[in-house]
Length: 66
Image (cartoon, rainbow, N blue to C red; front, top):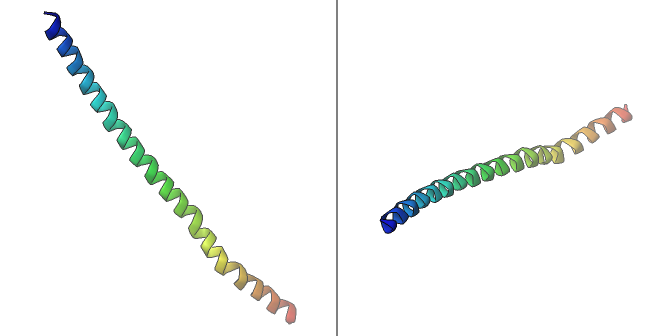
């Protein structure tokens, strides 16, 4: 009687452990996606500023020459 009861409890524990692992993997993938999107959202405007600031400064320099 004890062996079958222990085996049932171990099987239930194993199912819960598998469910927890699957949930942790989904969460890990979600965090990875959020980090990638955040980096892209931060880097792309910086790249735009690399080109926009010199053009803006050149425009202000042209205004001063008038």
